[in-house]
Length: 113
Image (cartoon, rainbow, N blue to C red):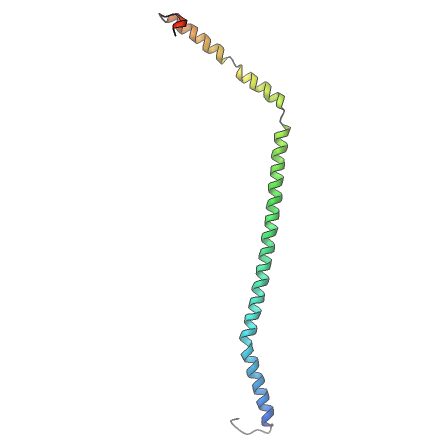
């Protein structure tokens, strides 16, 4: 002690040691609180990531289901009829007609073409 007091020296030493102990523990307590806060934040981050993945999976399943429903809802007979109309659009007849016109102006016979 630097100067004499009316308080017992043992009491002042005990109070001083307690204060030093509290001050010495402050950085460790602060780091412990920081670590707990960071682990809690990381836990929430992982929970949000899992929730987002679940929502993305639900959306992808819904879109795949909608695509399959659209594929199955197409009228296949209408498609077959449309394909037949397109394939019989007269292009073969047009080509045959052009071939006969060209062979009429050609000195060779159509079999020689």
